[in-house]
Image 1 (tube, helix red, strand yellow):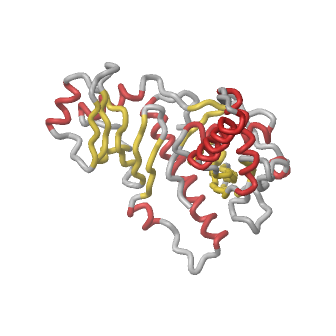
Image 2: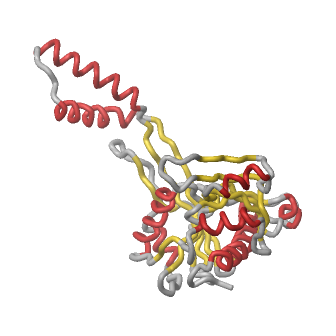
Amino acid sequence: MWFKNLRFYRFSEEFVLPDDFEAKLSEHLFRPCGRQEQSTFGWYSPFGANHEVLTHSQGDCHLICARREEKVLPAAVINAELDEKVLQIQQTEGRPVNRKEKQNLKEDLVHQLLPQAFSRFRLSWGYLDLSRQLVVINESAANKAEDLLGLLRSTLGSLPVKPISGADATEITMTEWLAKNHLPPAFELGDEAELRSPQQDGGILRCKNEDLTRDDIQAHLDTGKQVTRLGLVWQEQIEFILETDLALKRVKPTDMLMEQQDDLVDPSAEEKLAADFALISAQVGELYNDLSRAFSLSRSAT
């Protein structure tokens, strides 16, 4: 297990994990879709289907996992069936089918086809870091992260969190880093960046596997382009792409970090997950501390 994306949400007021947290999670367990349901979403054991425990703790960090089932109904299939029904009505009744009637026919088709639809399953991971008063979510898309937060909010009754934000716009800070080739001590440049013109119809430059300090890239900064995505390496331990909303994408451990991981002899799945989470929560917590200092995040841990 590794968190390939990181989205940080900060509690706006002091949060303490309730004593009955596990019981609250069990009230919102994942269940399969019913015949007429298009999706379901609920808590799932981090250790898999054969386990009842719904969280795993490492110090002040508490791992959670949710599972979603979605019925897959390809639009092409629905539209083909709809076209056939519309044509049948036109031919048998000799009249056009208006927009509202088409919509009703489409909804009926969805209900008819749902029991036959294939299911798609996905897991959503996150953890609560109470020492830093954070919720950390492994999702690349903000709306997927909000889904997990929404489930947690329903479980707890309230969840006073908001995305982290810096004192200055992230693109201004990243642009300054790249222009001056001077970063905070914890960070060094990676080999990927995206530069955008602030004008609505301006140009976009995307660099990958490049030396970002090259003169031609620097020339784009001189014309006013700003850095909107920047590849970074933290403490020679973790590589990632930093975006303007302070989300971390394509997060991966370096070889140096993986060499530090404890080598368990023939570990069980449970032992492997526990070891992975111990590594993730420790490293990501320190990474957040350095991001907090670099971007002057309020309520930051130091």
